[in-house]
Amino acid sequence: MARGSMVGWIISLVLVTLLFISIFPTFSQDIETSRKLLENFPPQVRNMFGLSIGSFFTFLGFYAYTFTYVGLAGAVQAMNLGLTMLNREVSAKTTEFLLTKPVSRTRIFRCKLFAALTVVAITNIALIGATLLMAVLFGAWGFDVHVFGLLCGAFFLVQMMFLSIGILVSQIAKIKSVISTSLGVTFGFFVIGLLQALAQDDTLRYFTPFKFFDHMKIVTDHAYQSQFVWLSLAVIIIPIAVSYAIYTRRDIRSAM
Image (cartoon, rainbow, N blue to C red):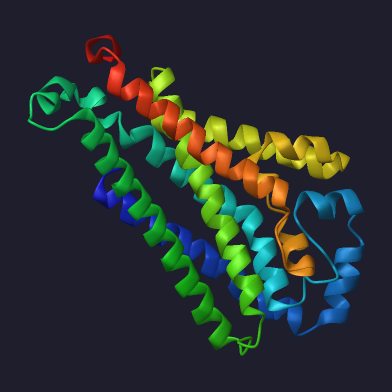
């Protein structure tokens, strides 16, 4: 991902986060009216959009609600990053030139992965900073720091999963359009998440990274569900390991 694109994505995610959180006082200052408004929606619709009336009017509850949308944008960013991490030289037809340098494929893979992880880390730090700033401005500073950390950790893990998936897809398929592939994969998983929320079928949670971490449950339970933590780690580690094996062994000419 080019530097300008990287900065653009980070700024966009920060602005989306600020936009959503800026709406919080509208609901928190007139809780009864807002509660009646939300109660008019069917439970299935509230589940689809991550609305929990019990916690929605707290800062962390509202922050968790924004993850439905900010999480989707963050997933697209991470997927883009994964798709381009190893494919930039292939697209520019400079792969052979890169590999003539006295640098092993292992080192190339490691350095590119480190660069991608740095972008994800910077994105998360920027979002955390923006959220804390809004909490101070709205006088909502007295929230549970542990729960806030869990919510931020969930966002980071979701981004890492889509980064890993993007890296793997770039190694097993020829990518004609990065943005189309990225949107197709992320929205596919997002739709599965919507169907899961609509049907309340926990089995479907295992088929979409968006539902590994139920943000409303994190707010109420103050914890992750352990099986999904292990599953998310597997979704992160296994595709990266497979991608590394493919990248270090494949005939580069066949990928061009």
